[in-house]
Image (cartoon, rainbow over all chains, first blue to last red):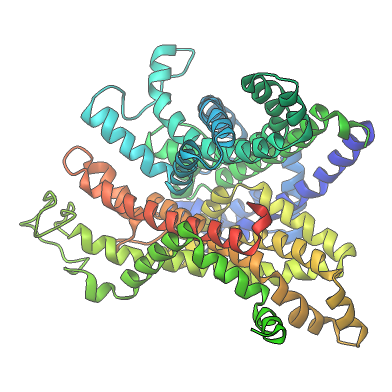
Length: 315
Length: 290
């Protein structure tokens, strides 16, 4: 186990190094000179431009710029926002809890819908319940979540008037209002993942149901309910749990548009606003943080997989 | 029928042909194909099919509900929503196909190189692929599109680059599996140069999984293009695109819900078509995966 952990963590280092190169490289795609953007109305003044270039290390060769940038990042310094005029790390930390709340709610909804649907679909394989579950899952995968969000606002806010169409109230201020403002976006985010979870659960359950231990359990006269819940499901959930952890990364992607539709001031809205304000350090910072979270989740999923599967523990 | 005739007819039945027959019998895949072909036809013949000019405004017909004159209603500038949906199909399908073509053109050769050569080349390419996959698809596409600047062409490039690692990984895995097959060994043994073994012997054998992935990735790319256009990073106004139409529609939800309903339904339908076709292709080419 220790050997596995060391090897697995060792793989993460080069990956993160490449991630940093990739994100640093983004800056080079930018049309025009960042110093010109930053200088604003003083762009005609060569002294101001030179000063900005020196501050941002833009006057140094590219490889030096990268090393300096990486050195700062490793110390938690993600640069300075051009628009908000605050450190990028601080801005991101402020927005993160909002998206985490949204993400956790969405994930809970996804599990509540996806896993039972997958079980029913596998147990009733090739029968109407299976077809319906598969059809709904396919529709879920094919629907862009921002459009689903717009349609839900149309139904629940505009027509029925049950829920606020936009805005966000933190949990600490008023939990009821907080839930009211996040339930629709969480549902929108959750359904896409529910569809993926349903497919994973179904295929894992179908496989588990055809195993010898399930036949044995049936042969000794156990009720079908017990066979499904205690024998098949426990084994089938192993891959589902790990694949589920990876879907948390997809949540971050989905949050960008969902937060935009519901005007929720989280992580996703931050990157979009930064894109439009040409606040490139924030764009880079968000992508970097998301990538690190994603690599971490991948690692956690792999470790979890080995932990809950005793056969792999000694491999 | 004589034994020789039976043997001959069986010989003609190549694996590809058997797969195609399975595909034709696959009902949902054929539904998917029909949807895709229908949308392709609409996109190609948009000038003939669209009842109105998609960019012509009319101050006397602003936000009209669906009627016999305007089946999908009109938008905030009095433009015909049906005509804009039809022309929008061009942007969406073009973005889907072009970005996947970019991803395959970049990803397949690199993936084959990694799988074929192994060693440090493979290690380097694989770590780079991991790094790209570590950035969630849409976030990477948004970041790329942001740095490249808002335009449909840049959105396609951004989506294409973001989808490249999927094809690198797939081509690498398939090449590694094919590399150890007897026919590849044989091709090498008779002295074919490495590039010819890769192009003539391995490539044709890894086409099926690539085809399946391409079809499914077009679906993802269409959603991504709609997302970028929705954010204002794709097709620029007044040219119609489903994503940007939805962006505008959001502001008129109470007065003109039809502006939001029809472009969205079009996205769902065409993406569903590609997903059905992709799933069917996978079932047909790899019956074990069912």
